[in-house]
Length: 561
Image (spheres, rainbow, N blue to C red):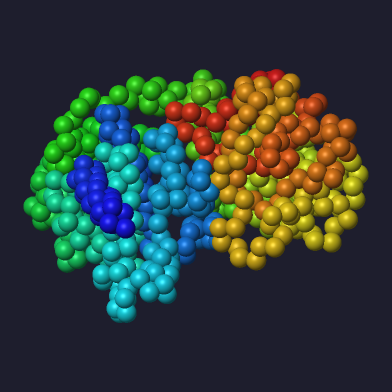
């Protein structure tokens, strides 16, 4: 017993030392927002991370959201935009997509935390008796859990810098525990190991012809009332900030003048890292954190990407058929993937958002005839289904390049079943539980699930691709891994019929036999995947399916000239 007791004490001591050591070594940056929402905290965080990464630092970004949902998985896209899925199956905020696209580094469950997750953990601890009969309160129990989560990635020892974006706007009631946790953590870490960047708005009053600093002053004042002095102000603006405005902001917000950073509206989010480089945001951050600047940032590949993006030699019109087209953020990763693929092809991709409900057999020709390619987007539910089927039938019959994602793939299977195999009223079990031909069926492991949140097939799964198929030519390899978010799958009872008629299952999950990719033999480009390839496209590595689809659309356009 005695040696074991000593060993336990030594192990605990070493663990405490390690945690303390990693806390000192890892620097923490907190990004808050003021005046209004949707200023682009995620883009600023990702841009700063890109600059620091380009200097040789190991950087990660995490998002803390103040809503009570455990995650955005059950939220309507109209409420919160796209739900982004990580490699390990976390349903997260769409800002994690920006983090991955900028850094070309995968995020995980630990990179997105909500109020709901914090309270769930604390309540479970209370039920287990972890608080020894104490009254559980926002301070210290909720704030302690927030602080613990804020430092988890830093304590791994993998990162030099952890950037934490706080959702919402300073002054929001739901954000208060997060702000208080940052205040406490800054005191614990010290001024050399942490800093706060406050993103704010400098509105322009056209009638007066002036930029106004008062909203920013009030936002910083609110932050000061909570005990936090921002170290750097990043100011969103439509017009350049002159020296007088910078001095005024510095004076009344208690920051150095070189810590007033202009973030002027840019043609594309991919300009922002270079804009922040000009403003020396990265140098200011490193100076405040007492970090040597190491190398000058290597952004040559980024500049090459931007050069091709801004100087295309071709142009294509691609239709995106979906049910949430009124809110482009619902398809954020898809639109960004087209930007990456367009740059790779030196082609400007002009996306045309088409409401699936507006399509039917009578109007589909007028809506799609001018397009060089059509993508049918993912989604859930029956609304817009018939319009998606009409679009797929049209592009299949007219040999227009087609790309289907998730429900888009399932719709291509339903359309082929109805119109080629003549399976009357073929459908998905999701849309019609009484259909005689459920060519898309509920996955076996989903049949006994009742809870909706976090229970779908989520995250990365392997796929084996058949040689000699278009998918194999696109990927250039026989085994891939892609991210998923679905409950329904191709019904393998119909697989032989489909393949005999010309729809090939070119990608199969090796463990379950799940059909991952379908394609048509006699079509210039008809490829659809059960997975979400848009979730893995980055600036550094555009997804090959998007790159090939854009190339096929361009070839189609040239062939019709």
